[in-house]
View 1 (cartoon, rainbow, N blue to C red):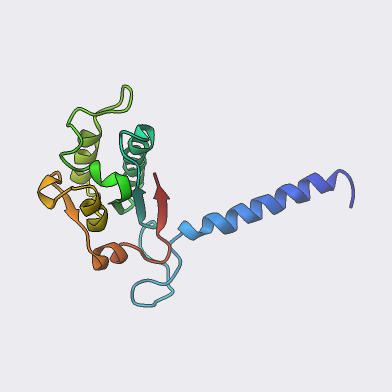
View 2: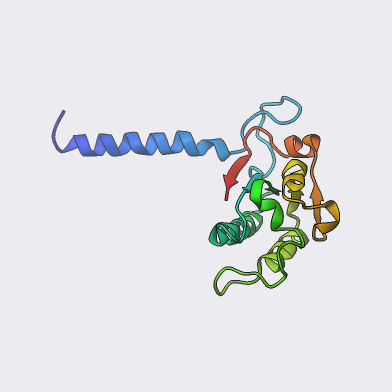
Length: 161
């Protein structure tokens, strides 16, 4: 191959790979009824929060920011707090806990809920960390299998913090 064309063909291959891998967040796929026509709107976003403010406060804060970005893009947002993350939407986290100079995490989360984000918390993880349903902030709910898997469909973009 011509030495001038080789870098261009390698770059083209990278672009094709990126398009194929990023294409999973598009909305042309099977909908809940098995119809392969294009679905309305952008793909939903599931944000799995496994971090807590003690071990990784930046990750928790970034999960809040990313959820806001997804809502700005008119995406349905489903936040799933599990593992150590169950402490975030609970009374175990004080109302003023924040990462650096950012708004308190609970304040950010309350605003996301007001904007339409669904907030679910893992019951198994809650039990392991002594979090009860009464400990959860307004708008957060103990999830169940149907609610969790109902939020995941072909094309759902999943991010873990």
